[in-house]
Amino acid sequence: MAVHPIDYRYGSREMREIFEEETRLQLMLDVEAALSRAHADLNHIPKEAAEEISKKANTRIVKIERVKEIEEETKHDIMAMVKALAEKCKYGGYVHLGATSNDINDTATALQFKMALNIVLKDLEELKEILKRLTEENIDRVCIGRTHGQHSIPTTYGMKFGIFLDETKRNIERIKRAKENIRGKMSGAVGTMASFDDGINIQKLVGKYLNIKMAEISNQIVQRDIYAEIICSLAILASTLDKIALEIRNLQRTEIMEIAEAFGKKQVGSSTMPHKRNPITSEKICGLARVIYSNVFPALLNNPLWHERDLTNSSCERVIIPETFVLIDEMLKGMKKTLENIVFYPENIEKNLELLKGRNMAEAVMIKLVKKGYDRQKAHELLRIIAQKEGDFKENLIKNETVRKYLTEREIEEALNPERYIGSAVEIVRGVLKED
Image 1 (cartoon, rainbow, N blue to C red):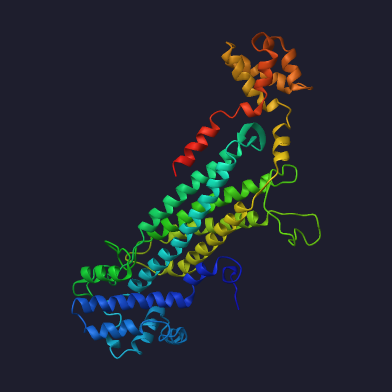
Image 2 (cartoon, rainbow, N blue to C red):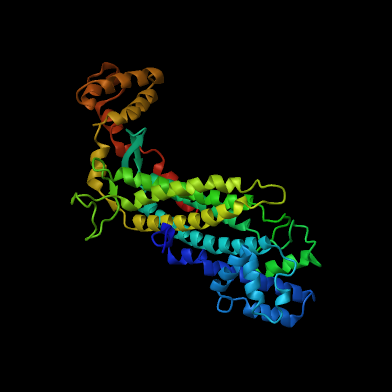
């Protein structure tokens, strides 16, 4: 019976399968097969031995139930796999020749990382295209800007989505770099290759057969800065998705309601309040991000180990690696669906833009006064005082002798028009779109 929600609630089938027991076993068997072929290429073992080991190294022959049965006796998962494979082979005595457990373990993990990151990168590229479309479509959709939760000067939805797009591009590059640093190993108990004849070429050949890079130097394990970089990169990605989801949640608040998650015809928002339409996918994304953030700390602690290694990283990695990947997969797919179907409420965008009845445009008036020759500091103080007064802001500006000395009524009206005060927003966003 499933216990962890990643087994039944979160993540795609494709991502979960990468971390299932049978997949893990097959990847370890693939490493053993590659090792046997490397030995045969260097004439360390008979060719027919490598052929047989490679043929038998699959989960149709080496059953996971048998591996677990042996592990129950040996209390060693890798040795259980080795024995289960060896007993199926006439040349079983050549299985695992010269290798230590983590030669198999870490190289299998490298294969998992590559497979899982390919899925993440595919989803990220699709997310990038969705954000690109939203940025283009809303490049000049003016809305109120908010700082400290308060209305500020205008911005555009093109700027909002453009920022998310730009950050998504950086996430893609960051994760690609982390993927490039993935390494396997085939270097023996402390990394010296003492158990191999021609260990350097053994390792090269194993990497060639598995199509992965191998560590230039290692001790008993691949160094965990590599793993930490992957987990940290995914955590940074999680923070981007968290940021986008948080913005959606805030903009969907009843009193704001500028954009919202799509709501299905039969979807239920509350078990007791029939009217509710909650941003549940965005809230889920924000919640799952917290779990991924928490996995960064153990990933960093897994790098400093005792001497040539200890086992404290092992149990931890069994949890944080699949958990991080399955949860980021859930978050990415949820974010793609949410943004693909996002609903805009133009009338509320316009209403919120005018909510302060021009007071939020005080900066624009101040800039106009300065351009006409008035002192900037005095202009700031003057507009601060006028903005605090009761009554219509525009009328208060028109009635003020100092303001009227420098600005005509028409110039005041122009300064209070939010559509005319978005600076280079459109040009900035076009730059982001061009960079792709």
